Amino acid sequence: MAVALAGFAILSGCGGGDTQTLTKAGFVSAADEVCMRARDQFMAAQQNPPNTAQGTADLQRNLIDISENELHEIRDLEAPAEVQPALDRYLGAREQGIALLKKGLAAAENDDAQAYSAAMAKLAAGQVQRLKLAQSVGFNECSRPEGAATGG
Image (cartoon, rainbow, N blue to C red; front, top):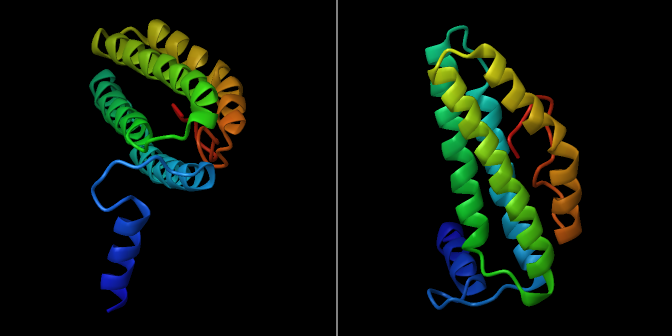
């Protein structure tokens, strides 16, 4: 019964299949949940750091998939107009972070440790800016580092 009620609450909160713009609070809450899930996946993927170029490339592919899924899920949430300009800036910064993960992937595939390190250093250097942009939307969980380096 509780599961059925929870399912109904989720459906009714999302318009039950009709696309419906969320309130700002509803949007922020839903996006923060997406970000928490992605951060947990990111941290799990990095539990055992690779020690080969192939392992690093595999990790990068996984991190790119997690980051792209997170980005798409946030975009699919139907943000209210009041947060759209700040959200666009934040998502643009996230796209730049994903591009750096892809540069890291290319470097790992080419066994180029120097290029990989440069891409990851650039990714880390943008973390504070991504966090500030996330906070300007109202997010509490998005792009918040959790102990390990993230692409968020």
